[in-house]
Image 1 (cartoon, rainbow over the protein chains, first blue to last red):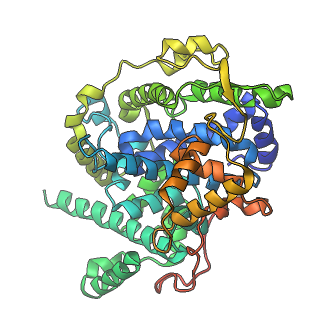
Image 2 (cartoon, rainbow over the protein chains, first blue to last red):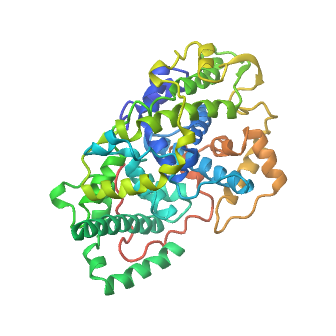
Image 3 (cartoon, one colour):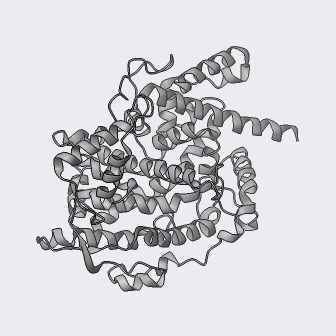
Amino acid sequence: MIGPEFSAVLKAATYGDEEAFGRLWRDLQPRLLRYFIVAAPAAAEDLASETWLAVVRGLDRFRGNEPAFRAWFFTIARHEVLDWRRRAARRPTEDVPVTGLTGLAAPDDPAAAAMEGLSTRAALAVVATLPADQAEAVVLRVVAGLDVDRVAAIMDKRPGTVRVLTHRGLRRLAERLGANVRIRGMV
Amino acid sequence: MDADDASFADMRRSLTDPDADRLALDEETVERLLSGDLPSSQVPPGYAQVAALLATTTAEPTPEELAGRPEVLAELRAVTRPRRAGTHARRAARPTKRRWAGLAAVALVGALLTGGVAVAATGNLPAPVRDVARSILGAAGGDLGSATPTRPDPQAAPDASSPASAGTVAGPKGPLPTGSTVPGSSPKGAGPVAEPNRERLCKAYLASQDKDHGKKMDAAAFERLAEAAGGESRIPAYCNGTQPGHPESRDEKQQPPGGQEQGQGGPSPGNGGGQGQG
């Protein structure tokens, strides 16, 4: 979040102030990319570009506070995802990855294997193993930092449905990670 | 809704599966897990790894993630030039969308592929999380060879202020003064749609976005709208300006009519109220 300065930052960006725009970029681009890595992994970078182009062109028409801006931003992002899925459906001969697991880092890097931590991208890959609606709801809540009502509007669902989706998503993640613990325990 | 129905399956399962009971969450805990606002001592049993996983998805950005900015700045410059000049100067042509996107994609895919695991090791995830992640990554590994980049180094990305230098990465020549696009209303230079008409088209479009209750939009009208907006994907942004009057909640206008009957909303666990962050 940018905070109290948001409206000044937004206005300056609308008039082409690159430093101001840079603040929007740093705040939102990583979230955007991470959202797409889960929602449309094969096209994440492409869709991020498309989204920013649309946002830049629409900046002067936006009115609202920071949470509203973020929601507007991710509304555009989600439309990019829907468009992408439509385009993909129209071109059945093209190789359309469904699993959401392409484009991930190579696993066999010894340096990476030696590391204690896990990358953000790999964590997103785990989230992406959830059913699509659950994964999207979780990412919009957690990564995009949007509240239930805004996520519901963006996903075109009722808030109660979004609550169910996130709840089930978390639970499924716990089951999956917990099952892994048990398997490890037996080996 | 299917999600609601499925929640009954969850409930049934929770009656028979002790493990599922163990993982039961109340709505407030869900909110706090989602917002990262739960001290590790309060994370419910079975959710420590989930909390760690979620924390990792919100880790500090990596340089790779922030790499594509020069190209977006070029667009910003092109779009805002007339505003800054305070004239109605014609907007510069913008590089074709595909070319631009391709460029950014090359840069970012490259950065992420090479940097993904190696760079962004944030947070120490518990071993089980790592194992799941590795097994996923391992499963995907086969596809990767061809995508590996000849990528432009983001650090060496050309100074955005000289559009021509962006050509070193692949493409956009930046704003060329050959365009004929009117700023604002019609990014692609297709004929702008007159205001009332635009409003009507947008309204129809927004209504058509409601999967459950929406009325299908007339194909010709959709084409007209897409053309005016400069492409299907720009319609949301284009339509954002059509409903003046409630600026603070404009984003919510994206929600089509009919998507708001919240009364029958959630199943038992969260009767309404609580949602987290602002």
